Length: 286
Image 1 (tube, rainbow, N blue to C red):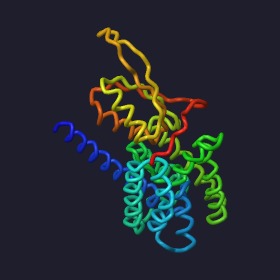
Image 2: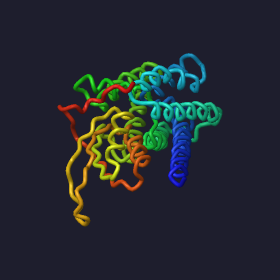
Image 3: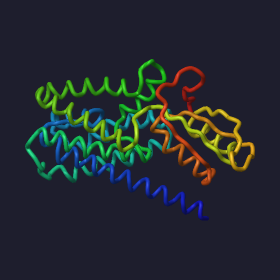
Image 4: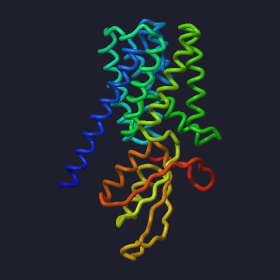
C-alpha cells in the first residue's frame, strides 16, 4: 500500500510540474516573444510563423503540428513519454490561447528576447526533466541520430537554422537575429534546469531485484543491459550491478522503473560524452 501511494504521489507531482512548465513556456512566448515578432525554434517556431501568416490561433497549430510526431514517438520512444508530451503540449496550447489577449510587458526587443528566452527555457527544461517534450523535432532527431552519424543536438540545430532563417523572411532579419538570441538563452537555461543536455546517460544500478529491473528496462525502454560483478565494501556480500545507457529523455522513465521495482536501489547516473559500437542502439518495442 505505501508503495502504491508513493507511485500515485510521483505521478501527481510529475503532471503538476508538466503543467507548471507549460505555463512558463506560454508566458515566455505570449508575454515576451510573440508581441515583438521574436520566435522560438522547433515546432513552436513553425507554429508561430504559420499563425502569423494565416491569422489562425497559435494554439491550434501547436497541437496540430505535433500530432504526427507524437504518433511516431509512440512507436519508437514509448507510451509514457508520449502521454506526458501530449499533456504538456495541450497545456501549452491552452495557455497560449488564454494569454494571447494579454499585452506584452515590454516593447524593447532585446529585453523581450532575453527574458522570453529565460522564461521559455525554464518551462521547457521543467517539462523535459519530468519526462515530456514540447517539440516534435526533438523526437525525430532522437530517431534520426540512431540511423546517422549526427548527434541529436546537431540534428535539432539543423532544423532550427532553417526555421530561424524562415523567420527572417517573414518578420525581417533583425527579428531573426533576436530570435537566435532568445533561442540560445533558452537552450542554456534548459541546460541548467535538466543538468546537462548530453544525449547519452550511463546508469549503474545496485539492487536486490536486478533481474526484475533489467527485464523492465529491456521491455519498457528497449535498451540493453550489462551485468557487472561487484562486492559490498561494508557487507562483503557479492552484488550484481546493472549497467545501461539511455538518452536524456529516457532518464525520467528509467528512474520510474527502478522505483517501481526497488525503492531501496542505489543508482548513479552520469553523462556520457560519446557512445559507439556494441549494441547501444535501441531496439523497437512492440
